[in-house]
Length: 171
Image (cartoon, rainbow, N blue to C red; front, side):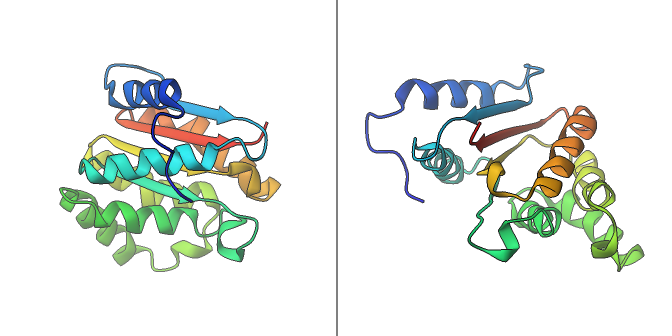
């Protein structure tokens, strides 16, 4: 995906930046739902690129029906955990994740909710740092995976008050 053409999507990008930078808001999810071909993935890529250039913690996950690893949620938690562990200043996350993996070597056999709890939620609670998750093309994830991911976000996000999640999908 490429980033936005200069001077396009100005208001939407401004709204996303304002929301993502506001640590006092209780609105943790920014959802962009629009028809195919309207630039949702381009906006997602733009935000990820801006956050990376500014050295702000951002964790992108781009679903795609075209690839086996990204048409379901099977690799979501492990991918997100690795990306979080790679972020500068997330040593406490890395330590907590290593501890989880040391005690639970079969984490990939757990159901999605437990994977999220062990690989993402618990280590992030210890790290206690703001992070922007960008989940693109959620509609390209299979129905079960989409349902599991949304359920986890609905039921667990309040335990991570410093986390923001930007989602793009078709309606």
